[in-house]
Amino acid sequence: MEKFRIIGGNRLCGQVDISGAKNAAVAVLPATVLIDGVCRIENIPNIADVTNTLKILKYLGSKVRYINKNTVEIDNRNIFGYIVPHDLARHMRASYYFIGALLSRFGIARVSMPGGCNFGVRPIDQHIKGFNALGATVSPMENGMIEVVANRLVGNSIYLDIVSVGATVNAMLCAVKSRGFTIIENAAKEPHIVDLANFLNSAGADIRGAGTDVIKVRGVDHLYGTTYSIIPDQIEAGTYMAAAAATGGDVLIRNVIPKHLESITAKLQEMGVYIEEYDDSIRVCRPEPLIHCNVKTMPHPGFPTDMQPQISVLLSIAKGTSILTESVWDNRFRYVDELRRMGVQVQVDGKVAVFQGVDYLTGAPVKATDLRGGIAMVIAALAARGKTEIEDIQHIERGYENIVDKLAQLGGDICRIVVSDSVAVRAL
Image (cartoon, rainbow, N blue to C red):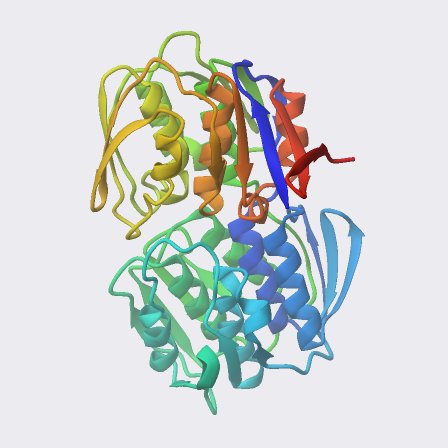
């Protein structure tokens, strides 16, 4: 078993480079299934979710070749599989993107219900609504599998009852090679939706309106090989912004798109954090104590739900009372029980958490409950007094590349330890 051991109290200072966006990569890689040629995908993050996605592609018959650790070449000209079994799908939520991609390629897809972080019921009813609208039939199977079949996908109007990133992605994947014209209304507007559309358009698709709530797709017969670079990770950048603020640090965060960070920047500035934007970087400095504020997560361009646990750490050490409202997912406050072990004073009622700021946090043994909750433990540990050991770090490494090295280069006292027979040994 591996853990992170963190000795808190050091200000994070220096420069850090942001990796490619996890949420964009796990959509773009399944989308390569649609392409009759060789794709070269650059700036992919070296994280577990990407590794698992590439394993699925190989299982389906893709030829995958790493050019370097952040560039991969994918040849799907001879892909043959249309089944994604449970042992491959269970590691991540985004495995359901293979439904839309395989359905569009073969007219059939059998995919196990996806895994990933567990914070409430996350049905795929809106995905099914999109599949049905385009002419597909969805049937449950044994062992948690679902089968989606269509003799021919035909363009149609799709109105999503709720804003859903996953359903928007699957609707785009189905529509891109369908016959005719598709309109997706109430579509998600996140940066990775735009990135997926840009990738598909670079391969010959005709997608317009990505980044707005109405996406229009005119089906094409063929998509061709292309070279594409994934956008920087908005959430990783926001995480380092929060870490700099929590430790009273001064960090230049490079390889970012500042516009993607506007909602995060606005809340940090409201809390008294100094932020300076450049063309492709952002400086975060916190010279004074944090000020309390209220935060409500919303679909893009609102404050992202994937930044909710990280900002909760800041609210926990800000002067006064702060209210954090989660409007996207149910049960996303599971991690606060671990933060309480470090001295956080918080009361949770449904989707609302009320934080009473404390003067300092104290190191403690904690567990990562999920990806973003786990990185909140890391931020809290960096800001806390004393030693913290974090278990179940596999959740964190699903979405953060070289997290130990990046934080250590900023001055964080963090290392990975291997625990064997109750004896901790520093990992080589």
